[in-house]
Image 1 (cartoon, rainbow, N blue to C red):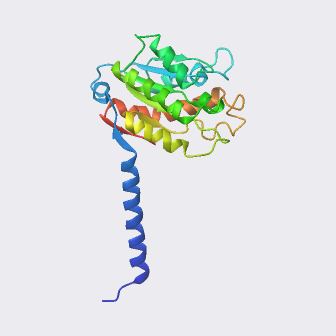
Image 2 (cartoon, rainbow, N blue to C red):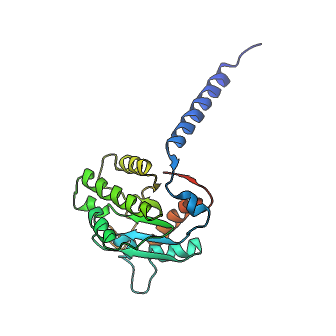
Image 3 (cartoon, rainbow, N blue to C red):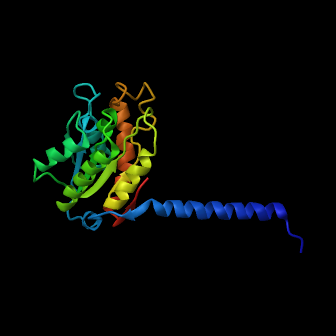
Amino acid sequence: MRLNVKWLFTGLALAVLAAWAWRHSRQDVWPVVNAERLAAGTDRTVLCFGDSLVAGTGTLPGEPGYPEQLAQRLGCEVRSAGFPGATAADGLARLRAAPDLSAGLVIVTLGGNDLLQQVPWAETERGLRAVFREFQSRGAVVAFTGVEFPLFGGDLRGRQRRLCRECGVLFIPNILGGILTDSALRADQVHPNRVGYGKVAERVAARVRKLTGSAVAGGG
């Protein structure tokens, strides 16, 4: 029987690609702390917690920001606690000052101001890790929305992913990707407008829907 060398190499290449993709996807899947409580319906309330992106900076008066548009997409009430200018350390301080603040699912958006203020990643990581653990100790599933700015290089997404994996947090990477570089989607250099926040809400909704039906979810 004659062997078609071209098809042989094609088959081998596809097999290698499939194996690489499987290994890569498995690296982005990990147990999420408290997910079983959310899947069981113990508490499916949603809280967005973080900085100006949660507060809706960039929208006009009366326009819906990201949490409001997220509520429309999830079909449930979404509460928000956003503090413009907050770093990860600021967020931790505000959380500790509000011992009853929690929800079934808490979506944390912090770290952007750390980048803008050139806070060392080690300090940002300590603050985020403490915020995650504090919400988890209150029974919440935690998701983290990563923020990246074009001018900042390095493996920031990799660092964010590793932190989320270590903490059992759902990772939603680069929620501003393609938004701040599009004048139709941004209000200024670091904030979306109403339409841009709609894009953010779509990205977040697509990832957190998994948590209501599964005890395991993955990163990005």
